Image 1 (cartoon, rainbow, N blue to C red):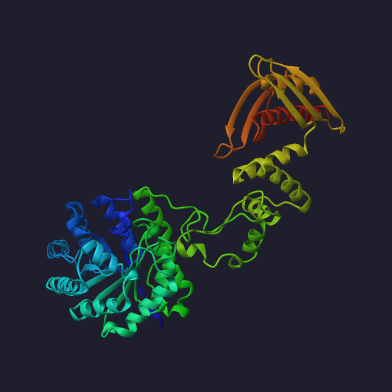
Image 2 (image 1 turned 60 degrees about the horizontal axis):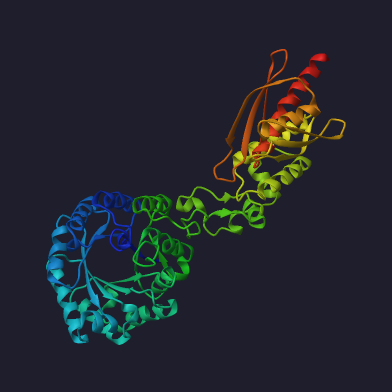
Length: 510
């Protein structure tokens, strides 16, 4: 059986310290409920002395959590901070006070202006004072990532002897390299007497983009608690992202001799909730929860994933609540991806028809960043319309503007495979184009309706035109056409209506 790694979530404390990410009490409670659904072990609910709102948040989350999670209030190594935290945690079933002090030369000499002996004295005093209120006391050695190894071990041993049940070794500035940070944890495990009786926690920041790697290095070398946030929220570049470290442990559990009890299927929901409440968007290429985490646009990747998902995906998207892999259709997609998506839409094409569709698809994909299902539907309809067409559009050219007279030149191919060109002018470009078409087709009709709508979202969306023409006998014929160019869409729609009129009259004559 592998070691259980406790997940300590600090989204509501450190995560909330991200500029612009502050939450009110009600919003914190919403996030806390989601944390309980994730089955986190510890919720750091806030810094009670910092504000009445933070105090109230800690108090209400402590009541909400009950026996389901340990609830933590943060303090400095100051008695009034500890008093306030204890008051906020009064009704918690599983309370923990998290107190600590800076231990690096920078923090001791430049910020606190204290000696090493004074640092140890304050640390021990804070832990001892907190023990008067709760049994579970966590000590943080701020900026441990830049502390002297021997002095850090001395501090940690002193607070464990004073009653600390959890010792937090933070890389507060995200300065460390993973190997070095792992060695720091290993050094403490080997040189601090009684550390085996305490939980060793790691709290890493992402200033160099290595927070997850640092946390996993800590786990590999003896840590049994990881402090993290949803989406990696946190000060500056953020904290270790919960979803990343948990899935890292899940993928490499045997190597790390570790597992967690997190309900990973709640990750996507948690990510979106945190993003919605804080207003901080998740980058699309964010690991595990980003919009592109399980999306494939390369033809080679799409072909592999369609044959066997794990050729390019180490995680089943369903494991993190992401549903299924996404095949994103772009100009880089191949036949296999197009065939797969068309089959999902209910179309079964033979090779010849698929090849024709692929050519049309590539033509469209070259004009758009992404081809959507609605685009494919439109292409399929366009293909079917062309199969029975008497006239097909070869080209259309428009000249218009102020003070020019709108003029259109249209080239069509008829059923006899002849190419015919005509030119005309009108009150606008569409009017001119339709008059040029009529010169070639020469079918009496009245254009009774014309409408345009976008097929999909975005400025590069296909525009679908619907027209209705009325024949002399009163019969109405509808035509549709879609293209990125509205004039081309209009020409296709008009021709489609006219082709239906011609075919219908020919059928009647039979």
